[in-house]
Image 1 (cartoon, helix red, strand yellow):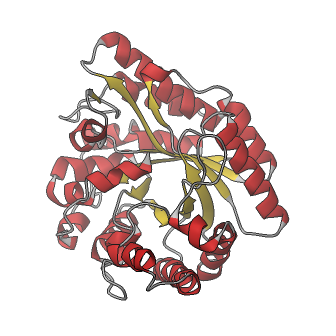
Image 2: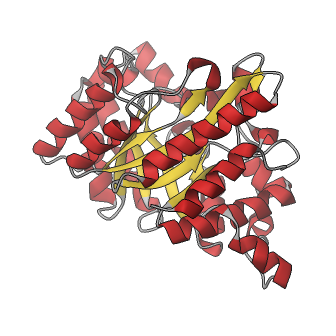
Image 3: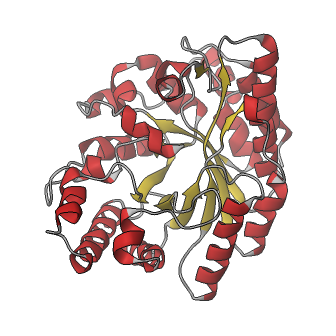
Length: 358
C-alpha cells in the first residue's frame, strides 16, 4: 500500500549529472539484442506502458539500478519525491530538485511519468497537520492551501506528466469514506475539487483515483465505481482508476479482476495497475516463486485483456530496495528481481505475458 513509503524516505542528494549519464548510449550488438527482449520493448509492441516506482537515492547512487530502470521500463513513477511533505517541507518553501531530476531522467530515456500523489491522508508536511490540529489553519484556509498545492505542483510539470494519482486511498475496506484530515475539515467535496483544480492546471494530463485492495470486485472497489460514475455524470474530470496491486500469496488472488476493469472501462475511463508487487512469507521456495509469478501474470493478463488498461507499474523491480521487509515482518521477495538483480520466475512471467500481447 502506498502509505508504507513514509517509513523509508530516500536521501535527496541527487546529482542530476549522474542521472542523465544513464541515458541510452549507442549500444553494442549484444546490448541491442538484450534491449529487444526487455520488458520495455515487449510492452511497446503490446501497446501498453510498463512502469516502475523509482527510488531516487538508488537512481543516483546505484549504476545497475539506473541502467535497469532505463532498459526495462517505458514509464516511471515517483515513489516519494512528489508527495507533499517532500515538495513543500516548510510552508511556501519548495524543494523540487529530486522530482525535477526524475522528470529529466525520464525525458532523456524516452519514458513517460506518472505523478504520485496530490491528495492523500499520509506523508503530509508537519506544518500543515500541526496547523489544523492547533486550530491556526481553519477549514477555509485549508481548502485554499490544498488548491494552491495541487495547482502549483501540476502546473510545474504541465505537459511532462502523463497521468496523476490525484486522490489516493479515500475509502475504507467497507466502502465508507476514510476518516482523513480532508474529510473531517472539508467534507467529501474535496474529491471533486481536487480533480477540477488539477485539470485546470494541466488539461492534457490524465487524472486518476488510486487505492489498494481494489483489484477485484468488492465493497471498496464498488464504492470507487459509484463515486466515479457520479463524478463523471456531474462533469468532474475523472479520467482513470488505478488499482495498486499490492498482493500477498498467502491471501490468494483477488476475484473478478477482469470484471472490475470492465465496469470502469464501460464508464469511459482508463484503468491501470499502479503499484504492483507480490510478497510472500519467508523463506522463499520454488512453489512460492511459482505462485508469485502466476499472480504477476494474471494481473498483467487482466490489463492486456482490457482495452481501458493503459499501464502496468510495479512498485519497485528489485528486492534490494523493496519496502516490504521493513513493513511486513517476516515477509519479502515481492518484486520481479532479487537483491542482485537476478530475474525471478515473476520477471519471466511478465515477459511472456507482454510477448503474448493483447
